[in-house]
Length: 440
Image 1 (tube, rainbow, N blue to C red):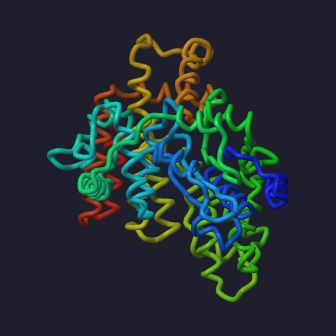
Image 2 (image 1 turned 45 degrees about the vertical axis):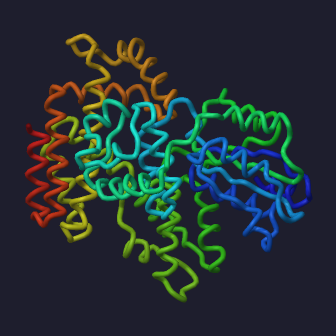
Image 3 (image 1 turned 135 degrees about the horizontal axis):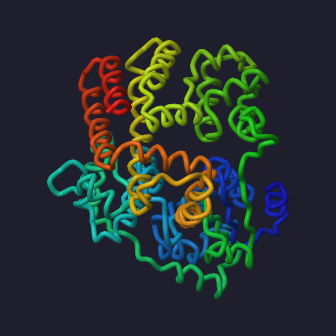
């Protein structure tokens, strides 16, 4: 990235850049590159930020329009993984939620309408929880993922807004963008594509390789443990302008609590900087005081307990969380989210492996006969591929109960979510749910 930024400052910029990888690093890198290309006083008119949900034709329109001033013009397109033929439906739903909460209503509506277009849905079907809205079961069947009960409000608001504004899904016309590059962009015009992941042979990957630059931005690890994760770029981005530092033991504690979610780490660093006030350094005690532990390993522990039906372990994990925070209300909803995710995964695995023999497959047989297809499926969707042994364990856990049990368990999670938000006793409700889901 440093070389590309130096090139841009020297007037040797390329017409197109694809920055792929961790969402936080890719997005901040794109902004740094754009800042190097467009002078600050010209950014109001010559720096345009779009979501890929706007569609290829709108992107072409911005690129083909000559800038009003002589300064370079940059169009940043975020979420470019939406241009892949197969997308992660759950990730797309989450992206739309983030856009809506950021008050980017048009981008959120377009992205969601594009996701559901294959099912023949429009804005009315997005009003989850209403008579016109599609049910969770229809979402799972037609789209491959379903909203949570907590998504009702914003989805209904989005549906009403899209209907009032007559918003429809953008046309599928990536070819228009590719043809623009064949003709050539206007002078000093640049496209910055930001994507978490695109297939290696995707047209945009080829375009960046042939006519510009393709950069991958991911946090490096010098080993397997979380302590080896390099978050120096995030720390510099968030604390550098404030002239604050993060103590080494505070950094380790932060990573232990948050794992490798760089966007979450950045958000917590911002809060920590405000918390310490005039202090020049953030100490471990500051992290312990305001950062709640949400590490991925804790989710795996809950998932394992639910999958194996270990009610004792599940109750112990909930009890440990209560001791850490001493507030059942602040523990129950996040913990319920972990339980629901574990149940959802077991249900998905149960459906995926429904046609396998009734007898339980051993690890070697699973790895040779089943895992290759699973790997191909997840890779094609741009999802993380688990280790074969982890996939085998998930397969075994999903067999613990019939698919109907996991469906009922997911319904119980939805009911528990509703009850929690309507004043139910959080500790009693969660303990009862864990017994029902784990012990059956």
